[in-house]
Length: 193
Image (cartoon, rainbow, N blue to C red):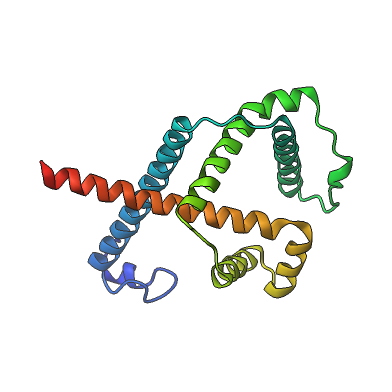
């Protein structure tokens, strides 16, 4: 029966004080999730529009490198799903024509977005400090179940993962800054009307 006693006994215990409290908290969580989804979607739309407004010719070598990266990520994902333990030797991976065809369009789009956002980050003087990088490494270590974040960071530094992570954080900060500008302009237009 749905009552206060039911709400109080949901695991973890004492998470809710009453049925009404449970309803309110679940409603708040759903609304927060929806806001997050809408914000992520808006960031994607803004990124797509900025990229369309600033077309960039991507060098073929970068496209090939990105396609190979995408193929390797897919192979690693397949391994995780199949719970295979062997590691992939990335140097031995040869991209097939079929894989190249499958990934080319997305690779170009992704690279164009990254290049535009990277230039925008320079224009806006956006930096990633060591604390932000460490916070993200610690967060990823927790998600991956790694107990020694410092050791993981060192390894990622050697493997080039740290540079990619720092670039991703910088692009995210750039998107956030652009979204602030969009929001400010939107509020200004709303007030003007």
